[in-house]
Amino acid sequence: MFRRLPVVLLGAICVFAAQAKHLYQYADAQGIVHFTDVKPLDGTPGVKSTLVRTDAAPLLHSREDGTDADRTIIFVNDAGGPVTVEIDVTDPQNVRTEPEVLPARVVLPGRSETRALHIAATDPAAGFRYGYKYTYLPGDYRAVPDANARHALPFPADRKFRINQGFDGAFSHSEAQNRYAVDIGMPEGTPVLAARDGVVMTVDNDFYGNGLDMNEYGDRANNVRIVHDDGTMAVYAHLQLESAHVQVGDRVRAGQVLALSGETGYTNGPHLHFVVQRNANMTMLSVPFQFVGADGKAFTPTEGMSVGGTP
Image 1 (cartoon, rainbow, N blue to C red):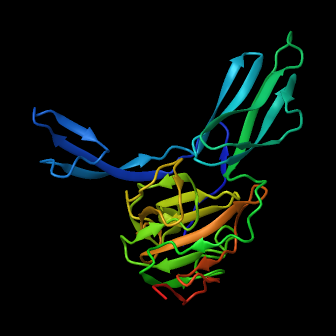
Image 2: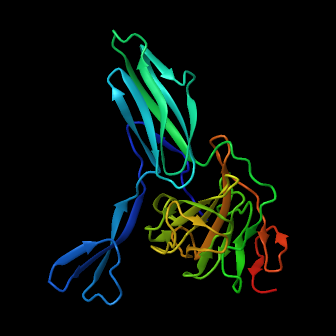
Image 3: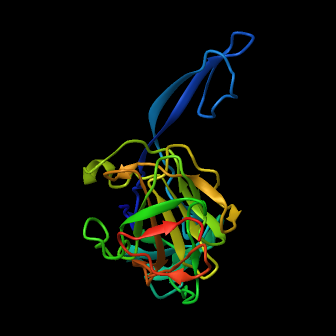
């Protein structure tokens, strides 16, 4: 199970996700009291830890550069992989734009600044006005999935777990973005491994709590999103609080530890939600996939199947 709003609508308003993280308080040898969100070294005396709510940074943000009569809209993409933006102007008066045809679709490379839209006065001697709006979605809308891609099991080879919910699962795998997802039951603290090589796009690491109240927990699953060379993206969700072993922009290899499994967000028990997605013309779709078992054979995961363990 994993729910998250993939499309963010932005104008003058930014959308943030509520999060939580630990705040640590301790005194050093000189008696100076420190407050930090970085865990002190093991053995530091007198450490007090408190869970506090914070705001996560948005995936990207925009700014305007230039003069009053000649403006450029610039997007800063903080994700480790591509994000597609659709931008348009609203209520334009005495305005010309580059590109001329709007709305325009722009792919922002990972960790980049992109000059996406130039706006100027058609008649510089006269006044002009405009607004602008945009939507965005993780991934490159032009990406074509590799039909031959295979995925290693996302946990250590000596472990064996049950698939509690498979493709088209009735409980929470009915939406397009999760239709081809699997929920693998596993104890909290199990190492979660990368199923394919890729680059870390996003890391949500600070959520805590769980339940079946969609309004309360629907977007509060800790997760890691990895973009692969073919543009598809794997999401590993419901991870343990502050257990991520990777950072945005890291290149990872199949089998590398990403985080620890947990029970955060919209869930009725500890498990790993795994799904491969693509940005399909500004709609997030899940992609059918196969795992490769310890015997080297590819198989389609199905509900009730036990997976893993040595052959």
